Length: 368
Image (cartoon, rainbow, N blue to C red; front, side):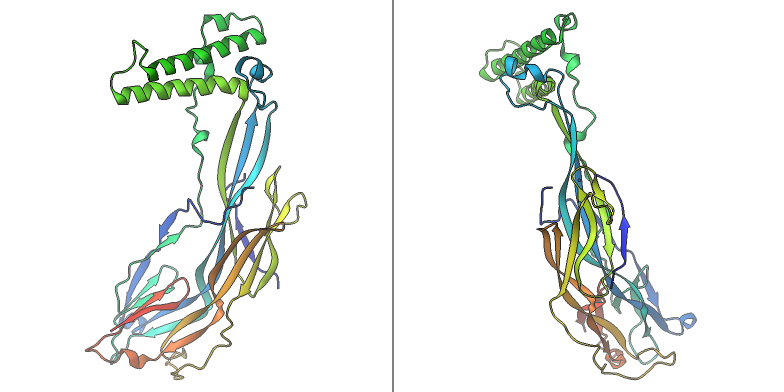
């Protein structure tokens, strides 16, 4: 069965492979406290979640630009290998897979807060996933679905080399002469820096902070001038996000295709190499087992607190034949549901507090 894939494009740019998830933004789940009132018939409806795979893909666009004096780099600076033409290409920096929960509209249940039981309030997420019963709930930080990072070399405050030139450069009549003057300026900067470091400069800063600032300025000036010969490289990094709702195990399900020349492209664009996912159950817990309490409420829901026992799955992501991610995730669709009987809440002297994982619907802990 072909899985439904929702793609949210947060950027476009494109292969160093990392198996860790870095530079991930964090967000906090908002929760709502529900109490027993006559208006809700002393009951709170909630949803159990189904799992969705969140796939975060970080890619970069690398742009190289030849310096105007690249032909003179070896002659004046002894640099035989420099950028000689403009180009751009994409790298796939990182793929990270996590699982999250969304409400399963087919799994709606009721927490009954009727008299004779002690379950006065329930915490739900904004979309109705159960968080806790009879217990105050503080959300954990969750991985956000988007992110973007831009490398420091993308800053617009980069120094212009042309602000460093003297009248001699401006009066140079040929490219070769301008390259010669630029090279002389580089050597002057290097001499100034060496004089400061060796104490031979009469105008050297007297305190450490000022000296550090001057040395940094000289380094920036030299870099700007050297790039006229060596060329420059810039890197712009952005993030794509894909959601996959697994219905069953998956084998070689294409997430997207990747091209070194175009970045991320459509699944049917053969100019890109496929990036695909495998999803395999690690443990098969069987069909939904019989619940301890088979009674029905007046509205027909299962009597008691229905919760998930999620299954586990192994996730692999491949770029062509190269594995770029491997890990384990919780998948509620591969697990079972169970029920806590309402009788658990009948002891008012020892009230039971239950905490859930809202992303999976599983029980986190039970306190009494």
